[in-house]
Image (cartoon, rainbow, N blue to C red; front, side, top):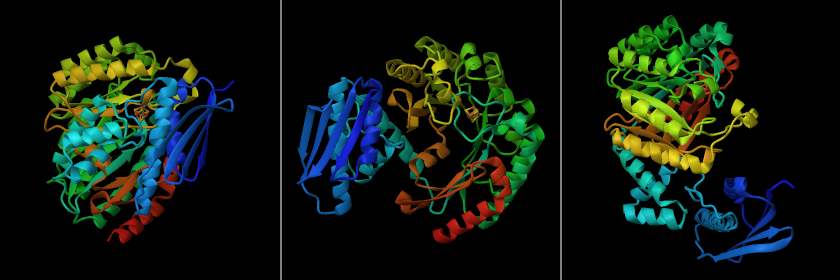
Length: 479
Ligand code: SF4
């Protein structure tokens, strides 16, 4: 028998949202169930059947709202609550984020803060209506308040820029990004840079009077370019954009095995103000399992080298739930990072994404259970607060182990502006390169137009003129 929950929807259109709620509980389901959800006569009802026999039922009478879209939302939220409560009761499990399944939970807090609601009131709504746990409510409100400091300084017409370099030395087991092992694609890199420079030139000309608040070169691993290519890329960026007043310029140095003293010097000389060196784990056995071709010592050596080269804002990423890692392993990683004292640390919870090797070969890896992840997250919080790092941005992904979150922690004043902007969608982000998605933001985020580039590198190179044309059309609507 395959544990399943079949969903039937009558009188409403909340099927997608209800499926997301049901998916949260699937790891804990042991039988074949059917859930019937109905909206009728101002009442929402949920019936749970086991082998055709009614096992549980819940109803809620709604107070009718005249506005149609608000009414639809009311029905949807009420059904989500009932399905969630039914499944909590059935499985004896609660989810840390309750019925919040979106990737940007802080947006809700920003909306309530904009309505001048008090923190305690917002906390109460998150708890009673969204079923969010107390620890997450505290985190959400703390992060939202820190984000406000950054968002309030957004100037009208100001943008941020993202430039993607979709190459890495090798592919990590958990990766689902658009990224190519650079050794296998050497001949493509030059063609890619040529196409990218064309797109940079177009944007620089089309937006020459637009102030740039932050610039982010991500990937992939931008430092997997060789020294000459990296120098040419950063020189090109510097020659096309006015970086004199930019608040933040990040390059993801990512994998330590791609970083050399010369690359660190090039980045510093060409205006980069923030870099990210991402160990993911400071345990050698884990680095070997996830496909990293470097040692733990290499990470520390490169970090010190970066400091020597004048990099005063360094982020480090770690991942919780890596194959075979225990709480003790995570503690070891945190102790090693404490010795380095980076300016920010981003804590990711492993997400098993469809396009990753981890998904394809999941049976080979022992995945960490939700309970362990919770312990690891609270261990991180304890260590990072002790290191003087505070949570400043957070987001969630689908298929995260234990349905948790990713949180960025930073020393005061070292928060990554770009991370906040991309999460809160209050500022236009012009995104260049294969797979990059430009987001044109109107009226402080009330409407967002997306202009995507193709993901495949060969396609991007071949169709670069079409990518530029797409942007042109997007900007025409924007004017
Ligand atoms: S370094 Fe990042 S982008 Fe590159 S393969 Fe690993 S996870 Fe993917």
